[in-house]
Image (cartoon, rainbow, N blue to C red; front, side, top):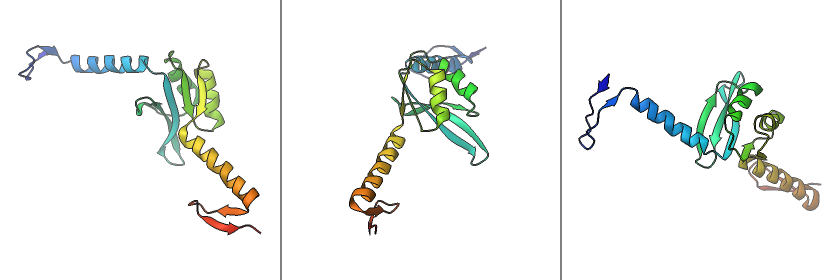
Length: 146
């Protein structure tokens, strides 16, 4: 069945399957070009059910939301991307194992948030040990530790 094209600048007939087919082809091209990929958890319902989200780090866009964060589900999705070079992930051992099994050819690095978190924890320990300072949760100096 052909849909009548109402665009005055393009006088071409298109089937009703054309828009979904174009969207699929664009998605396939984007996914084929993925090189830096992020994986993170998200909550369907906090404390009850979690899923995983896969992110194109270069474009800062989520490319897939998985219904769960089971190892097999995420590994299956990662294996579809043969061109991956880097995977960013959090500090959870599960994510490390998934990245290693699902895309062994990649470099696996902590994501930016976790790098900053690790760095801030090191700084806090340094200030406590060497300067005797204890920092509040807002980074304010509370004073010397006795």
